[in-house]
Length: 360
Image (tube, rainbow, N blue to C red):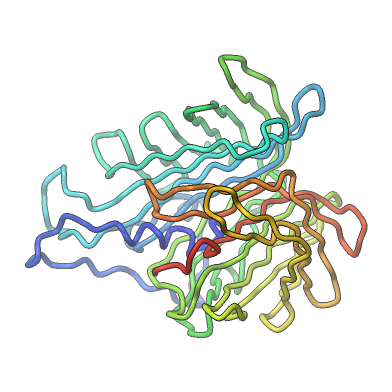
């Protein structure tokens, strides 16, 4: 709900490693409560955990006031390859990247994907600070906290600067984010809402200046979802008053709610947490994909306690097919947000497991 969340990258666990049958398997670090995050170190990679990602989404505006949505995601997935193998070619870490652009003038999502084993400076996720790369796609954080993203996709190029305007938002219990009924179903998770964006979007060789706002998630974990999990719905929203909303639910294979959580941080930094029983997702309108025949609740109402949030998509067709990299098809799109019927902000909605239940 990259994501979102630790379960976004779980798709990459389906990729088999090249380890031989008798090689030693690595021992990955568990996610434990009461372990405080430490910055700037936690901005960087955590290779001792099985999965990790950096996930940026946002709304852009062109000089003629045209709205665009974008997604840039980098995944790191540790394999079961023998950690003692000294070969530089050993596939110990996989780096996967997705990028997408939503433009109502086109009517469907433009997207691309890349993947490679870590090594030789061509693909990596560095420790100490955010610096992830696959070929000529890169996301790097400078000492002042600003992110630089460069993505040369098949149908577009994104060259964006994302500048924080607020401190990181530690999700869950000071960064320990439960993802299911069992305590070990958890991730370390923080967000950076209300990022100010400047840069260019290039299509057909024509660069266009853009400004806007973005949301960045960074999560890492070793655990998996509940065996009965079919998929999830997640939203991250930058609200007009400077607040930030994150909400998700994990759906069971029967369609019920396995787990849910939400957090609302106001402009002054005060966070209100919502427990599973306080979070509800209700479909307002469905859209059926002409490619996969999956039906997605693209217009949705989320209830957090007494507050009702209405989500309306920038465009209905924001389905992303990543079967060449993570094995998944999911809906990931820009949405407008209303609070109790009044316009309140903009964000991104992710929905997975609608084509078929996930195989975790």
